[in-house]
Image 1: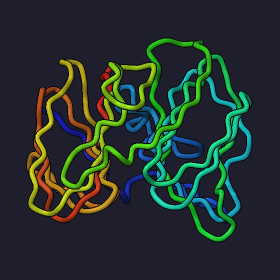
Image 2: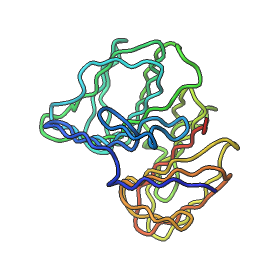
Image 3: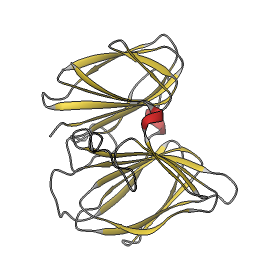
Image 4: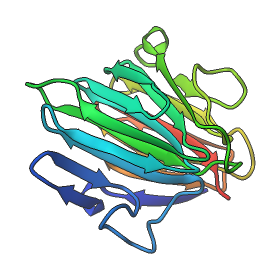
Length: 235
């Protein structure tokens, strides 16, 4: 098994009066040739947006995008007349394909919104743009991984890529066994909250760990933890 550790305090950082964004991989003004991607996982941004502010209308092309709200309310709008407000327990996905314009704004005028913005490289380019949103609350059970993205219909959402995303909240002292879905796959663990141990490596809040060249691994929770797992092709 091979691993690559990204501590929270080594991430790129964009700070404006309306946005506080941390970048696990190269993004915007942050560029590190050693941190461009993990396999097909291209962007993992941890965003805080001030009340009433947000990302105005801007283009995307040939990218799979998933937004996961952590706090507050996130409002999506796009050039295909989709409009939706999502809150924790919802996720939204977008296949940008041949091109789409969209915005992501804080729906609240009084409370900040926090969300993860994740980009994955697609297996096929220039597809028809698609936006979807999902309520994953029925899947979220304490001490269980909820499969929220899969390519085979076994999860609510899918991407135009062979990806499996799982998320869950676990109490201290739990062990999570994970089996890869293929030989050329890797899993990127992003610890939203808590403290965990993987193969002797301890992760704290907002740390990330990429795992590859193995078919399975285990996670031990050292504190109550909120964990996101993103399995992607290693390309």
